[in-house]
Amino acid sequence: MLTLSDDEILAQRAQELAKPFISHHQSLESTGKINLLVFYLGSESYAIDASKVLEIVPTERMTSLPSLPPFILGVLPVRGMIWSIMDLRIFFNIPRKGICDHPRAILVETSQLRFGILTDSTLDIVSCESLNPPPEISEKIPRNVVRGTINELTIVLDLDVLAQDPRMVVRDDIDS
Image 1 (cartoon, rainbow, N blue to C red):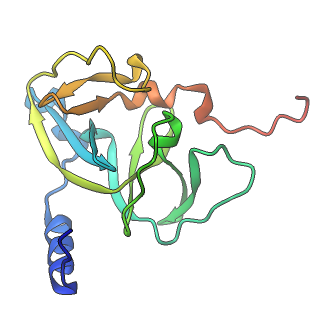
Image 2 (cartoon, rainbow, N blue to C red):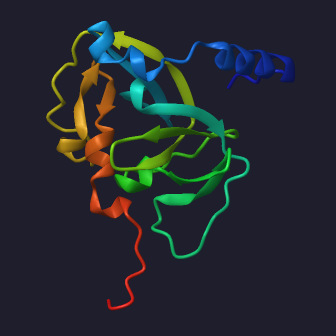
């Protein structure tokens, strides 16, 4: 395993922060292409619609809360808003292979919900004209959440379908 010096780590982080952010206006409607943010969970790569991404933030200030579903790791304050941060590995019941030392959260907004997705690292924004069909078997990820794939290895998730999953709304029903 390659160990990076502090200066190399800081240089990598500076390069990642300096990358241009794709705005909502640069979505499929305005460019004719799908802009996707590719990210890693362990050794697996996933992608989401970049137009739904608000920002990527460090998770050092995340606070765990009792009585939340296991896939909600905690809440994170960002500029006066409280964001629930979810781990897709737990949500989809995919074995966890560890998390990196400096995880981040991708803050996303759908028409139904705002939430954060824990990620080990983000790769890049990629543009493509179309997606490949979803794989026949995609581990334990429900087929309706998978929009397709890019480069045959990266699963593209549908955040709108994910946000409609009943497990995403945490309730404290008194009459249960």
